[in-house]
Length: 222
Image (tube, rainbow, N blue to C red):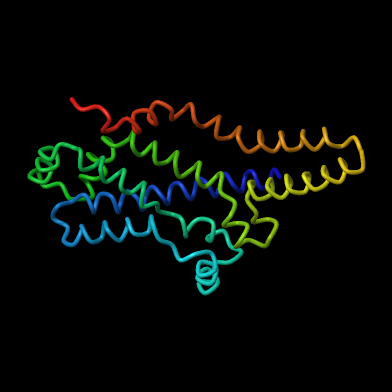
């Protein structure tokens, strides 16, 4: 269980960093009026929010890419969220155009504008998206349930899911037989919930101020 805790933390960090990198690249490019075809590209992103191939085609795709039972299958498939990309793109579009135009006149490249101007001004939004990515990956276990077989690659939530199911089955048998194990099974379930929740509770206070600022973007107009 401790190994799964550290492994899940590592997966969550890698997933969050990769998700932010891809989201920033996509959002900044689609926020630029000079990008040709950006409207159709945005539509392609939005389509993925409403339609998906399903579990079986996804499994066959992971199998054809030789990603089954690997760490990559927990990081790459869901590395970018169209919803998060739209949030960041909207935040970038809300920046003063004159600020970006002045940087271009001074000879700044797109990468320098992104790194030195856009990203510092979007820190609240980035912190919010980082929290979305981290919590989403930390709480997810269905992909590991479908794609992972090795015990050493199972994330914490999957092991807790199996543990709760096993304790529930044992508790049902104990209840039917009149045994006194029901209270112990409930303790196990409560312990698993706390074991999975405490790490997020510890991290959240450090980015709470950015999270509040990020979700309030656009809610108040001056």
